[in-house]
Length: 356
Ligand code: SF4
Image 1 (cartoon, rainbow, N blue to C red):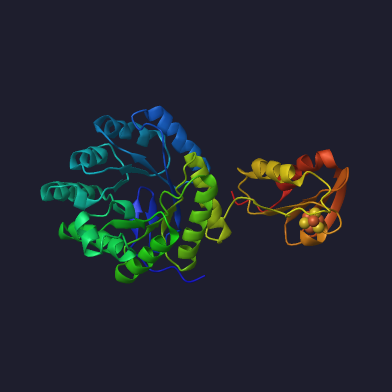
Image 2: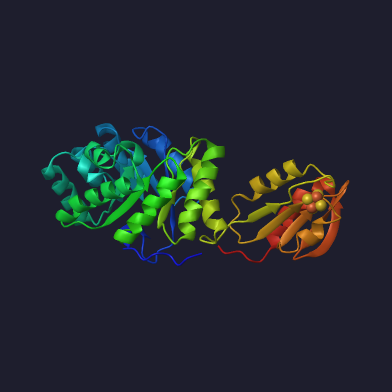
Protein backbone atom coordinates (compact mmCIF):
# COMPACT_ATOMS: atom_id res chain seq x y z
CA UNK A 1 0.00 0.00 0.00
CA UNK A 2 1.33 3.44 -0.92
CA UNK A 3 2.00 6.09 1.71
CA UNK A 4 -1.00 8.35 2.21
CA UNK A 5 -0.76 11.56 0.21
CA UNK A 6 -0.13 14.62 2.29
CA UNK A 7 -3.18 16.84 2.53
CA UNK A 8 -4.20 19.86 4.55
CA UNK A 9 -5.60 19.04 7.98
CA UNK A 10 -8.99 20.52 8.85
CA UNK A 11 -10.89 20.33 12.10
CA UNK A 12 -14.43 18.92 12.22
CA UNK A 13 -15.79 19.19 15.74
CA UNK A 14 -13.48 17.13 17.93
CA UNK A 15 -11.90 15.33 14.95
CA UNK A 16 -9.62 16.15 12.06
CA UNK A 17 -9.80 15.26 8.38
CA UNK A 18 -6.58 15.12 6.38
CA UNK A 19 -2.93 15.49 7.26
CA UNK A 20 -1.84 12.79 9.67
CA UNK A 21 -5.35 12.28 11.12
CA UNK A 22 -6.77 8.74 10.95
CA UNK A 23 -9.13 8.12 8.03
CA UNK A 24 -12.63 8.81 9.29
CA UNK A 25 -15.85 7.05 8.40
CA UNK A 26 -19.00 8.96 7.45
CA UNK A 27 -22.59 8.19 6.72
CA UNK A 28 -25.79 10.11 6.07
CA UNK A 29 -29.10 9.75 7.84
CA UNK A 30 -32.27 8.95 5.92
CA UNK A 31 -34.70 10.15 8.56
CA UNK A 32 -36.66 13.38 8.15
CA UNK A 33 -34.22 15.87 9.68
CA UNK A 34 -37.18 17.86 11.05
CA UNK A 35 -37.87 14.85 13.26
CA UNK A 36 -34.96 15.49 15.61
CA UNK A 37 -35.65 12.50 17.88
CA UNK A 38 -35.71 9.95 15.04
CA UNK A 39 -32.58 11.52 13.55
CA UNK A 40 -30.75 11.41 16.89
CA UNK A 41 -31.73 7.75 17.31
CA UNK A 42 -30.35 6.85 13.91
CA UNK A 43 -27.13 8.82 14.46
CA UNK A 44 -26.54 6.97 17.73
CA UNK A 45 -26.94 3.65 15.91
CA UNK A 46 -24.47 4.83 13.28
CA UNK A 47 -21.97 5.87 15.94
CA UNK A 48 -22.29 2.42 17.53
CA UNK A 49 -21.28 0.93 14.17
CA UNK A 50 -18.12 3.05 14.02
CA UNK A 51 -19.40 6.07 12.10
CA UNK A 52 -17.19 9.07 13.03
CA UNK A 53 -19.00 11.92 11.27
CA UNK A 54 -22.64 12.12 10.23
CA UNK A 55 -24.38 14.20 7.57
CA UNK A 56 -28.00 15.20 7.49
CA UNK A 57 -30.00 16.71 4.64
CA UNK A 58 -31.24 20.23 5.28
CA UNK A 59 -33.89 20.89 2.64
CA UNK A 60 -35.78 23.67 4.43
CA UNK A 61 -35.91 26.10 7.33
CA UNK A 62 -37.59 23.66 9.72
CA UNK A 63 -34.84 21.10 9.11
CA UNK A 64 -32.20 23.79 9.72
CA UNK A 65 -33.90 24.76 12.98
CA UNK A 66 -33.82 21.12 14.18
CA UNK A 67 -30.02 20.96 13.86
CA UNK A 68 -29.30 22.49 17.27
CA UNK A 69 -31.38 19.86 19.02
CA UNK A 70 -29.79 17.08 16.98
CA UNK A 71 -26.30 18.41 17.70
CA UNK A 72 -26.95 18.34 21.45
CA UNK A 73 -28.28 14.79 21.30
CA UNK A 74 -25.29 13.15 19.62
CA UNK A 75 -21.63 12.56 20.34
CA UNK A 76 -20.12 12.78 16.84
CA UNK A 77 -19.61 15.77 14.51
CA UNK A 78 -22.65 16.87 12.52
CA UNK A 79 -22.54 17.96 8.88
CA UNK A 80 -25.36 19.96 7.27
CA UNK A 81 -25.98 19.06 3.63
CA UNK A 82 -27.34 22.13 1.87
CA UNK A 83 -28.07 22.90 -1.74
CA UNK A 84 -28.25 26.39 -3.22
CA UNK A 85 -29.16 28.35 -0.08
CA UNK A 86 -26.88 30.73 1.81
CA UNK A 87 -29.77 31.42 4.18
CA UNK A 88 -30.05 27.74 5.24
CA UNK A 89 -26.26 27.48 5.53
CA UNK A 90 -26.13 30.49 7.86
CA UNK A 91 -28.97 29.05 9.97
CA UNK A 92 -27.17 25.68 10.18
CA UNK A 93 -24.04 27.43 11.41
CA UNK A 94 -26.09 29.32 13.99
CA UNK A 95 -27.47 25.97 15.17
CA UNK A 96 -23.94 24.72 15.84
CA UNK A 97 -23.15 22.24 13.04
CA UNK A 98 -19.53 21.15 12.72
CA UNK A 99 -19.24 21.22 8.94
CA UNK A 100 -21.16 22.29 5.86
CA UNK A 101 -21.53 20.42 2.62
CA UNK A 102 -22.37 23.06 0.07
CA UNK A 103 -21.10 23.97 -3.38
CA UNK A 104 -20.34 27.68 -3.45
CA UNK A 105 -20.88 27.84 -7.22
CA UNK A 106 -24.52 26.87 -6.66
CA UNK A 107 -25.32 29.43 -3.99
CA UNK A 108 -26.05 32.08 -6.59
CA UNK A 109 -25.00 35.47 -5.33
CA UNK A 110 -21.39 36.38 -4.58
CA UNK A 111 -22.61 38.15 -1.46
CA UNK A 112 -24.21 34.89 -0.23
CA UNK A 113 -20.97 32.95 -0.70
CA UNK A 114 -18.99 35.65 1.11
CA UNK A 115 -21.37 35.62 4.06
CA UNK A 116 -21.23 31.81 4.37
CA UNK A 117 -17.43 31.74 4.07
CA UNK A 118 -17.06 34.53 6.64
CA UNK A 119 -19.43 32.83 9.11
CA UNK A 120 -17.57 29.51 8.69
CA UNK A 121 -14.22 31.21 9.19
CA UNK A 122 -15.37 32.94 12.38
CA UNK A 123 -16.53 29.63 13.83
CA UNK A 124 -13.70 27.43 12.49
CA UNK A 125 -16.16 25.34 10.45
CA UNK A 126 -14.94 23.61 7.26
CA UNK A 127 -16.85 23.30 4.01
CA UNK A 128 -17.01 20.20 1.85
CA UNK A 129 -17.37 20.79 -1.83
CA UNK A 130 -19.23 17.79 -3.24
CA UNK A 131 -19.00 17.33 -7.00
CA UNK A 132 -21.31 14.72 -8.47
CA UNK A 133 -20.80 13.55 -12.06
CA UNK A 134 -24.57 13.58 -12.54
CA UNK A 135 -24.95 17.29 -11.84
CA UNK A 136 -21.98 19.06 -13.39
CA UNK A 137 -22.38 22.67 -14.53
CA UNK A 138 -23.79 23.02 -18.04
CA UNK A 139 -20.97 25.22 -19.31
CA UNK A 140 -18.38 22.74 -18.11
CA UNK A 141 -20.15 19.83 -19.75
CA UNK A 142 -20.13 21.70 -23.07
CA UNK A 143 -16.39 22.28 -22.74
CA UNK A 144 -15.85 18.55 -22.26
CA UNK A 145 -17.95 17.39 -25.19
CA UNK A 146 -21.13 16.92 -23.17
CA UNK A 147 -19.56 14.25 -20.99
CA UNK A 148 -18.92 14.28 -17.27
CA UNK A 149 -15.35 13.07 -17.62
CA UNK A 150 -12.96 12.83 -14.67
CA UNK A 151 -11.25 15.97 -16.02
CA UNK A 152 -14.59 17.82 -16.03
CA UNK A 153 -15.28 16.69 -12.46
CA UNK A 154 -11.88 17.98 -11.35
CA UNK A 155 -12.42 21.31 -13.14
CA UNK A 156 -15.77 21.63 -11.39
CA UNK A 157 -14.20 20.98 -7.99
CA UNK A 158 -11.35 23.40 -8.63
CA UNK A 159 -13.88 26.03 -9.75
CA UNK A 160 -15.77 25.76 -6.45
CA UNK A 161 -12.47 25.78 -4.55
CA UNK A 162 -11.40 29.00 -6.33
CA UNK A 163 -14.64 30.73 -5.28
CA UNK A 164 -13.95 29.95 -1.62
CA UNK A 165 -10.27 30.85 -1.90
CA UNK A 166 -11.25 34.24 -3.34
CA UNK A 167 -13.18 34.77 -0.10
CA UNK A 168 -10.00 33.97 1.84
CA UNK A 169 -11.39 30.58 2.92
CA UNK A 170 -9.40 27.37 2.67
CA UNK A 171 -10.74 24.96 5.31
CA UNK A 172 -12.00 22.86 2.44
CA UNK A 173 -12.69 19.16 1.94
CA UNK A 174 -13.42 17.92 -1.59
CA UNK A 175 -15.34 14.99 -3.02
CA UNK A 176 -15.85 14.02 -6.66
CA UNK A 177 -18.18 11.08 -6.98
CA UNK A 178 -19.50 9.19 -9.99
CA UNK A 179 -21.64 6.07 -10.06
CA UNK A 180 -18.88 4.07 -11.72
CA UNK A 181 -15.49 3.13 -10.37
CA UNK A 182 -13.38 4.26 -13.34
CA UNK A 183 -14.39 7.92 -13.34
CA UNK A 184 -14.45 8.14 -9.56
CA UNK A 185 -10.93 6.78 -9.15
CA UNK A 186 -9.54 8.83 -12.02
CA UNK A 187 -11.09 12.08 -10.77
CA UNK A 188 -9.55 11.65 -7.30
CA UNK A 189 -6.18 10.73 -8.80
CA UNK A 190 -6.18 13.81 -11.04
CA UNK A 191 -7.31 16.13 -8.27
CA UNK A 192 -4.74 14.90 -5.80
CA UNK A 193 -2.00 15.85 -8.29
CA UNK A 194 -3.33 19.40 -8.50
CA UNK A 195 -4.32 20.34 -4.95
CA UNK A 196 -3.64 19.28 -1.39
CA UNK A 197 -7.13 19.66 0.05
CA UNK A 198 -8.29 16.63 2.04
CA UNK A 199 -10.46 14.21 0.10
CA UNK A 200 -13.79 12.68 1.04
CA UNK A 201 -13.96 9.57 -1.13
CA UNK A 202 -16.89 7.45 -2.22
CA UNK A 203 -18.71 5.93 -5.18
CA UNK A 204 -22.15 7.48 -5.41
CA UNK A 205 -25.44 5.78 -6.32
CA UNK A 206 -23.54 2.53 -5.98
CA UNK A 207 -26.69 0.45 -5.62
CA UNK A 208 -28.25 -1.94 -3.13
CA UNK A 209 -26.31 -3.58 -0.30
CA UNK A 210 -25.03 -6.30 -2.60
CA UNK A 211 -23.89 -4.26 -5.58
CA UNK A 212 -23.05 -1.15 -3.58
CA UNK A 213 -20.77 -3.07 -1.25
CA UNK A 214 -18.86 -4.48 -4.21
CA UNK A 215 -18.64 -1.12 -6.02
CA UNK A 216 -17.55 0.73 -2.89
CA UNK A 217 -15.07 -1.93 -1.83
CA UNK A 218 -13.35 -1.85 -5.20
CA UNK A 219 -13.50 1.92 -5.70
CA UNK A 220 -12.47 2.86 -2.19
CA UNK A 221 -10.00 -0.02 -2.00
CA UNK A 222 -8.16 1.14 -5.13
CA UNK A 223 -8.01 4.74 -3.88
CA UNK A 224 -6.95 3.88 -0.36
CA UNK A 225 -4.33 1.49 -1.68
CA UNK A 226 -3.05 4.38 -3.78
CA UNK A 227 -2.74 6.52 -0.64
CA UNK A 228 -5.73 8.69 -1.60
CA UNK A 229 -8.57 9.49 0.79
CA UNK A 230 -8.88 11.15 4.18
CA UNK A 231 -12.50 10.35 4.98
CA UNK A 232 -14.99 8.06 3.26
CA UNK A 233 -18.59 7.19 2.81
CA UNK A 234 -20.07 4.00 1.44
CA UNK A 235 -23.33 4.87 -0.37
CA UNK A 236 -25.92 2.10 -0.28
CA UNK A 237 -29.59 1.93 -1.08
CA UNK A 238 -30.09 0.42 2.35
CA UNK A 239 -30.23 1.24 6.04
CA UNK A 240 -27.41 3.77 6.69
CA UNK A 241 -26.23 1.50 9.52
CA UNK A 242 -25.29 -0.96 6.78
CA UNK A 243 -23.17 1.77 5.14
CA UNK A 244 -21.25 2.31 8.35
CA UNK A 245 -20.75 -1.42 8.81
CA UNK A 246 -19.37 -1.86 5.28
CA UNK A 247 -17.18 1.25 5.55
CA UNK A 248 -15.72 0.10 8.83
CA UNK A 249 -14.95 -3.32 7.37
CA UNK A 250 -13.25 -1.76 4.34
CA UNK A 251 -10.97 0.22 6.65
CA UNK A 252 -10.34 -2.77 8.88
CA UNK A 253 -9.61 -5.05 5.93
CA UNK A 254 -6.89 -2.66 4.74
CA UNK A 255 -5.49 -2.30 8.29
CA UNK A 256 -6.54 1.35 8.44
CA UNK A 257 -8.71 0.90 11.52
CA UNK A 258 -8.14 -1.12 14.65
CA UNK A 259 -10.67 -2.64 16.99
CA UNK A 260 -13.38 -5.20 16.38
CA UNK A 261 -13.28 -8.92 15.82
CA UNK A 262 -12.27 -10.18 12.38
CA UNK A 263 -14.36 -13.24 11.56
CA UNK A 264 -13.10 -15.48 8.78
CA UNK A 265 -14.81 -18.70 7.77
CA UNK A 266 -14.06 -21.49 5.37
CA UNK A 267 -15.92 -21.59 2.05
CA UNK A 268 -17.53 -25.01 2.85
CA UNK A 269 -17.04 -28.07 0.68
CA UNK A 270 -18.09 -31.71 0.50
CA UNK A 271 -16.35 -32.37 3.83
CA UNK A 272 -18.40 -29.79 5.76
CA UNK A 273 -19.91 -31.47 8.79
CA UNK A 274 -22.10 -28.69 10.26
CA UNK A 275 -24.46 -25.92 9.12
CA UNK A 276 -21.50 -23.65 8.62
CA UNK A 277 -23.37 -20.89 6.80
CA UNK A 278 -25.73 -20.48 9.76
CA UNK A 279 -22.96 -20.85 12.33
CA UNK A 280 -20.69 -18.27 10.67
CA UNK A 281 -23.57 -15.80 10.50
CA UNK A 282 -24.40 -16.36 14.17
CA UNK A 283 -20.75 -15.83 15.13
CA UNK A 284 -20.52 -12.65 13.05
CA UNK A 285 -23.69 -11.21 14.60
CA UNK A 286 -22.70 -12.19 18.14
CA UNK A 287 -19.29 -10.53 17.79
CA UNK A 288 -20.32 -7.45 15.79
CA UNK A 289 -20.20 -5.10 18.78
CA UNK A 290 -17.19 -6.65 20.54
CA UNK A 291 -14.33 -4.16 20.52
CA UNK A 292 -11.43 -6.61 20.76
CA UNK A 293 -8.72 -6.78 18.16
CA UNK A 294 -8.87 -10.52 17.53
CA UNK A 295 -9.20 -12.91 14.64
CA UNK A 296 -11.81 -15.65 14.95
CA UNK A 297 -12.12 -18.45 12.39
CA UNK A 298 -15.17 -20.64 11.83
CA UNK A 299 -14.27 -23.90 10.08
CA UNK A 300 -16.43 -26.66 8.72
CA UNK A 301 -14.62 -29.96 9.37
CA UNK A 302 -12.23 -31.54 11.82
CA UNK A 303 -9.99 -32.92 9.05
CA UNK A 304 -8.58 -29.65 7.72
CA UNK A 305 -10.25 -27.09 9.98
CA UNK A 306 -7.70 -26.94 12.83
CA UNK A 307 -4.73 -26.63 10.45
CA UNK A 308 -6.38 -24.07 8.17
CA UNK A 309 -7.39 -21.99 11.18
CA UNK A 310 -3.92 -21.81 12.73
CA UNK A 311 -3.46 -18.12 11.87
CA UNK A 312 -6.55 -17.21 13.88
CA UNK A 313 -6.39 -16.30 17.56
CA UNK A 314 -9.48 -18.40 18.20
CA UNK A 315 -11.38 -20.89 16.08
CA UNK A 316 -14.33 -23.19 16.27
CA UNK A 317 -14.24 -26.25 14.11
CA UNK A 318 -17.51 -27.98 13.34
CA UNK A 319 -17.72 -31.75 13.51
CA UNK A 320 -20.46 -34.36 13.40
CA UNK A 321 -22.16 -33.81 16.75
CA UNK A 322 -18.99 -32.47 18.41
CA UNK A 323 -16.74 -29.56 17.56
CA UNK A 324 -13.37 -28.23 18.60
CA UNK A 325 -12.28 -25.06 20.32
CA UNK A 326 -8.88 -23.98 18.95
CA UNK A 327 -6.69 -21.26 20.35
CA UNK A 328 -3.64 -20.01 18.39
CA UNK A 329 -3.63 -23.24 16.38
CA UNK A 330 -3.82 -25.54 19.44
CA UNK A 331 -6.88 -27.68 20.07
CA UNK A 332 -8.11 -26.73 23.53
CA UNK A 333 -11.09 -29.05 23.93
CA UNK A 334 -14.02 -30.85 22.34
CA UNK A 335 -17.50 -29.50 22.92
CA UNK A 336 -20.97 -30.58 21.85
CA UNK A 337 -21.90 -29.08 18.48
CA UNK A 338 -24.82 -27.22 20.01
CA UNK A 339 -22.47 -25.51 22.50
CA UNK A 340 -19.90 -24.30 19.97
CA UNK A 341 -21.12 -20.69 19.79
CA UNK A 342 -21.54 -20.34 23.56
CA UNK A 343 -18.07 -21.76 24.20
CA UNK A 344 -16.54 -19.49 21.57
CA UNK A 345 -18.12 -16.42 23.16
CA UNK A 346 -16.69 -17.51 26.51
CA UNK A 347 -13.22 -17.77 24.96
CA UNK A 348 -13.58 -14.35 23.34
CA UNK A 349 -14.57 -12.95 26.69
CA UNK A 350 -11.41 -14.38 28.25
CA UNK A 351 -9.15 -13.24 25.47
CA UNK A 352 -6.69 -10.74 26.79
CA UNK A 353 -6.21 -8.35 23.87
CA UNK A 354 -8.95 -5.97 24.98
CA UNK A 355 -8.19 -2.57 23.46
CA UNK A 356 -10.87 -0.66 25.35
FE1 SF4 B 1 -13.88 -28.02 3.50
FE2 SF4 B 1 -12.99 -28.52 5.97
FE3 SF4 B 1 -11.68 -26.73 4.40
FE4 SF4 B 1 -14.06 -26.10 5.37
S1 SF4 B 1 -12.22 -26.50 6.57
S2 SF4 B 1 -13.39 -25.87 3.25
S3 SF4 B 1 -15.11 -28.06 5.37
S4 SF4 B 1 -11.89 -28.94 4.06
